[in-house]
Structure formats: C-alpha cells, structure tokens
Image (cartoon, rainbow, N blue to C red; front, side, top):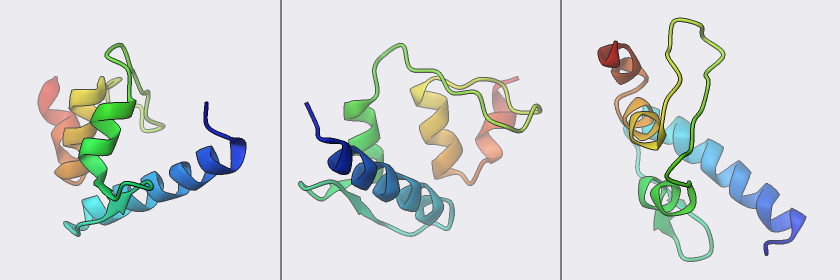
Length: 80
C-alpha cells in the first residue's frame, strides 16, 4: 500500500500530466517514469468512472477519460 505522501505526489504528477497532455506535451509519472496515459491505464480499475464538473460532459470510463485528456477535452462530446 502506498503511503499518504506517495499518493499525494502521484496525484500532483497525474494532474500535471493531464494539463500537459491537453497541451500536447509529453510528461512522465511515478517512480518508474511511465508515460502518463500508460500509468493511468495501469492504475485505474476496469470499472473506473469519473463525473466531470461540466454537466455537458457525460460520465467517463477510463477509455473515455484518457481520450478526453489526449484530445484536449473534445472527445468527451463525441460519445453522445
């Protein structure tokens, strides 16, 4: 199990990766310096769901969330 400081560090790195991913920049996450998308794919469960604060965006599974990040948020609207 990860310690609270390790979880906080991964959270900060993952948020930075999402922001950089939306800008089309490459970034690494975690002690193994994984690509942010491979890291999230590995750590998120198969039944992961996220509800964005924007009500126009439908809840996303991990496939759609990663596409949302990769394509700057535009992909979320394509799944309707």
